[in-house]
Image (cartoon, rainbow over all chains, first blue to last red):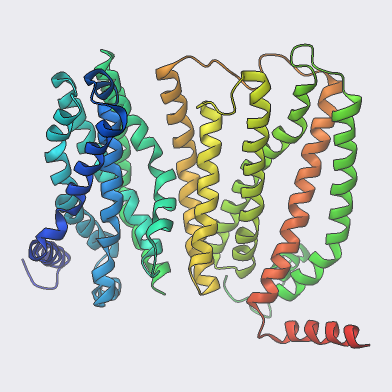
Amino acid sequence: MKPGTTSAACTALLKRDLALTWRRRGDALNPLLFAIIVVALFPFALGPEAQILERIAAGTIFVAVLLASLLSLDSLFRSDLDDGSLEQLVLSPHPLSLLLACKIAIHWLTTAVPLIAAAPLLAMLLHLPDSVLPVLLAALALATPLLSLIGAICVALTVALRRSGMLLTLLVLPLIVPVLIFGAGACNAAQAGLPYAAPLLWLAAWLVLALVLAPLATAAALRISLT
Amino acid sequence: MPACTGTMKMSPLVLWFHKLGSPPYFYRLAGRFLPWLYAIALVTGAVGLYGGLVVAPADYQQGDSFRMIYVHVPCAWMSLFVYAFMAANSFVALVWRIKLSETLAMASAPVGAAFTFITLVSGSLWGKPMWGTWWTWDARLTSELVLLFLYLGVIGLYHAIEDARQAARAAAFLALIGVVNLPIVHYSVVWWNTLHQGQTVSLMGQSKMSSSMLWPLLTMAFATHVYFFASLLARSRAALLALESGKEWVRGIAQTQEAHAHG
């Protein structure tokens, strides 16, 4: 790979982001801890009866994962903005959307994949039937990249703000309602013995759409924010 | 927009359109239209409300409660119309960087949010006697709620960024993302709703409205549209004054105002 090419730039960026996350690996586990805490709170509020927990298990896990990835979104561009490397990315001759797609991919790998890996544990805590677990994992695997991609657009819009926490939530939540509906819907359908392929396919279709469009939109939003 | 070369002749309509994009010209024109729009909105609104609340016969099924329609439905139409208007202006603002479109888009957001809020509240008040509940997770209600969140997001983003023009561009971008998202939200909510239960309530039923009930509704719809444009012009005039506060024409207006106040 020749230095200076776009693929070299992407590889360098991927390595750098991975190294940075690895050096602060404690922080990377925060979303995971948060999701486990949220899920653990539900039995306290609703009582320990297995039937009730089983009924709400898939939806609760989905909401917990959604909130956890929302919590981690702010860190997507924050440190890069502080040390000025975000501006260097914008100024670089390589396509910004591609570079941002690399950043989003690493962010998804380091925050969402641990959440998916912990999903069986969360499912066990809430007595989710074993037969639904594969559907839950598939739905999470399709939904979490969507959350990262859609969230990245909103983060790019709010990146220049000092306190963006509440505003970011307000921007992201209406946009990810469909993801929640179809993701949790697939699990609920599987639990009720109904066909669940359609919602999963819808999620997959949106993921393909978002994979193409969201990095472009993120790049455009970032250019607006940093002018 | 590319600079117009002096020798190129423009048709009067295009010329007028170009002039409309200039803040001082728009400010003066809007000021001239504003009282008329307010007057028309007030008169047609009064006529529509009188027609709806007094003249129109009570519904054979819903009784007098159905009269909520004369507030609820025009506001619901407006909540969508204003969003479309905002998105169209956002598109123009982002593509051609026209300052006036940014102002118009941002000025329409609070009005649209207000219409959406009124729709939700009046629908809730209507739902209590009709369905026996303030709120139901019906597809339309849920989409309207998401629409309100989208409006609030646009308004929140606009006010969070200090530089007014950058704020307007960021919020306009968000409004455009919302446009892509809104149909997806609507259809997914419909799907979600039908998964759990059949459509138990439909707002209008299958009944066709008789003309005695329809004309006040259409009058109200007209009144709310005119009111929106009046409110929009008033808001954008204020926003333009703030945005261009260092410019000559604003100083001129401020000086004449001061002269009036002292003279």
